[in-house]
Image 1: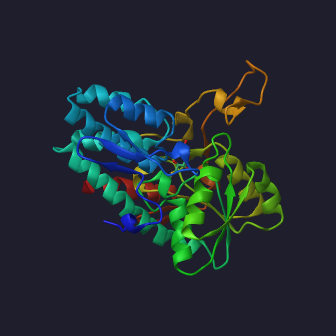
Image 2: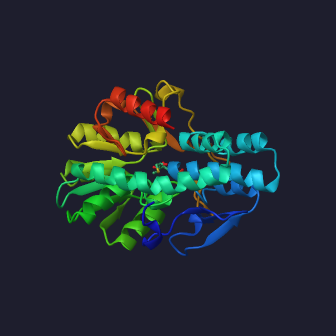
Image 3: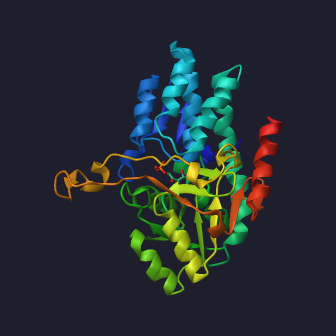
Length: 334
Ligand code: MRU
């Protein structure tokens, strides 16, 4: 297993025998607080409010939820369906639930998923560091760091590996409206890691790229369809279009478990619609007239053609067909 325990960023989620302990990410960056889910209902609430979030972390949470159902005497199939229904877009949630359901010992399987996550992210970070040149300006959207995983991070894992290689990257951090995962979480992580970063509003990417201030974009993913179309936090598609326009390479970093062979293309990806209030208010204060119509889709889908490559634990893939073969070979080896 990796060395996340000595990490400046503690593991986001842990199985504790009869409960799940997780960082309550709603309280960052102000305080680092651990909370316990002792029932499946509690876990589902924590997932819905994004106390635990990010595709790989949701995979571990899903598996631990099945283990929790087991030890608390809740019908496991009912619990599994309840957990999967909390958030529809990140395929890792259903993947983690299914792995625990298929295992003889769901708790041991959940712990294996958590330990593997850190190892996988270190591997994909090492594989992807080549796309970050010395002193590069890297732009990222949302939070695909240690907090979105069990540890180390995917997109931030790539940046972190480049930093550990002495390349001194600088990161433009999109704030990521409406829930500010970039401002609250990514900037906090980079600060803890001693990686140079600058927080910007989402709409500044155009200005940065037109001024030649972005060398490469690296983001995470919630689900990669069989043809390479990639779902990630809303706003990612716009960044990819801009990157294409300005000739900036756009990379996606994610574990192979985020590739969904059963989803043919982006049109088949279910995009979560969240509460209107997340957009119509900021920090509990209304910023729009009461009752105004709001569309709060939480993700968008970047067409495969805009992606320069997918960075995984099995290496960097530029052809989605080869990525799919790699995903299928992992499934067979389990
Ligand atoms: O709504 P969130 O915060 O769960 O969205 C998270 C993202 O979009 C991440 O970029 C994605 O899950 C990849 S995490 C390594």
